[in-house]
Amino acid sequence: MNLYIEDSYVLEGDKQLIRETSTHQLNSERYVHTFKDLSNFSGAINVTYRYLAATPLQRKRYLTIGLSSVKRKKGNYLLETIKSIFEQSSYEELKEISVVVHLADFNSSWRDVMVQDITQKFAHHIIAGRLMVIHAPEEYYPILDGLKRNYNDPEDRVKFRSKQNVDYAFLLNFCANTSYYYVMLEDDVRCSKNFLTAIKKVIASLEGTYWVTLEFSKLGYIGKLYHSHDLPRLAHFLLMFYQEMPCDWLLTHFRGLLAQKNVIRFKPSLFQHMGYYSSYKGTENKLKDDDFEEDSFDIPDNPPASLYTNMNVFENYEASKAYSIVDEYFWGKPPSTGDIFLIVFENPTIIKKIKVNTGTEDRQNDILHHGVLDVGEKVILTKQIKRCDSYLRLGEFKNGNFEMSDVNQKIPFDIHCMRICVTKTQKEWLIIRSISIWTS
Image (cartoon, rainbow, N blue to C red; front, top):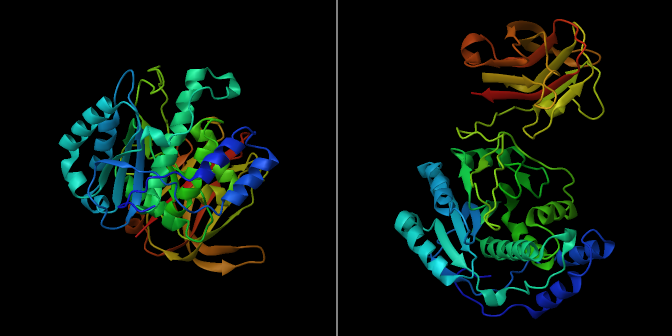
C-alpha cells in the first residue's frame, strides 16, 4: 500500500478467504496450515482511506503508535490519550514517533466533531507530520450482522468485537510503512514518561533474539509492540478471523503461530488504562495495571555476565531469570547460611546503581530474610566456576530488598563480581525477582 496513492478496490481473493475460513475453529490443523500459506502474504489490504487530518509522511519514523476509536455511550478519553503520548515524550523523542488515529465509527457527525477537536488541540503535531487521523469507510468492512455467537456472546457483543478486529486490521494495514516498529494502544490510555526511550533500550537489549510481540502492559492489547514488517500479516490475520474471538485473543494466537512460544513482558508497565466506561455499551471498566509507573521507566543496563548459585533451584527457574529484563525470576528451595548467588561480569564494570528485589506479590514471604551483597575484583578460575579473589561488602538486605546508588563513588575499583550471600538459614523458599544494574 502506498500512503500517498489511494487504491479503490478490495482484493476479491481476500474476501473469499475470509468467507471460507471463518467457519472453522482457530486451533484446528486446517487453520494452522491456512495461516502458514498466508504467511507469504506481505502485501497490503487495498483500502481507500480517508485522510481526516494529515500532512504527507516525509520519512519513516522509529515507532508508530496506533489508536482506534469509536463513539462511546459514556466518556471520551481519546484527546487525553493523544495528549499523554505527546506530553510524556521529549523533543528528541517526538522526532522519532508518529501517531495514527483511526476514527472507526460509521457516524460521520461524530467523526467531524472529533476531527475538529483534534485539529484544534494538536495542529502543530499534524503539521509536523507526527499525527495522522484516518478513516476506513464502511464499504470495505465484511458482514457484521448475523455472525455466529462463539462463547455464547450476545449478538451485539459479537458485532462489536468483530468490527473492532476489522478496525484494527485496517489500522495495522495503514501503518505498515510508517515506521520500523509499531505499538498498539487503546483510546483510553496514559503513558509513562519517556516511554519511547524505554522501548528503544529494550529492543536494543534483544538484538539477535527472535521475537514477534513484546508486551509493555499486562492489560488486553495495550502496549503490544511489533516489527512493522509483520503488520501486513497481522492485518490479514485479524481480517480472516474477525468474527471468531476478541482481538487480544487473536494477538496471542498470532504470536504462537509465528513461533514465539512464551510471553515477553516488561515491568514496570509503560501504559495504563484510564477509561472508566467501556466503549462497549458504556459499561464500567475499572481495569488497572498495577505494574504501571508513570515516572521515567529507567531500564537497567545489566551488562553481559555469567550467573552461578549453589542453592537448590526449583524446576526451570534458573539463576539467569533473575538477571533478565523480561518478567521472569529465580526460585530456589529454602537457602542455608553461606549459600551464594554470584554474578561474574564479562568485563570489569563501573556500576552506578544496584537494585535487587526478592519475593513476589503472590509469594510475599519468599524473600531473602537475612542476606548481604558484596562486590569483588580480580576474577580467578576454579574447577567449578569463575569467582573473584576478594570482596567488599556493600550492605545488608532490608525486607528482602537491596538498593544502592552512587556505587562508583563508594567503590575504588571496577567491579568484576557481585555476590548475594545468605547469612541465616530460612525455612521459606527464595524468589529473586529482579537484579538490576546501571552502569556508567
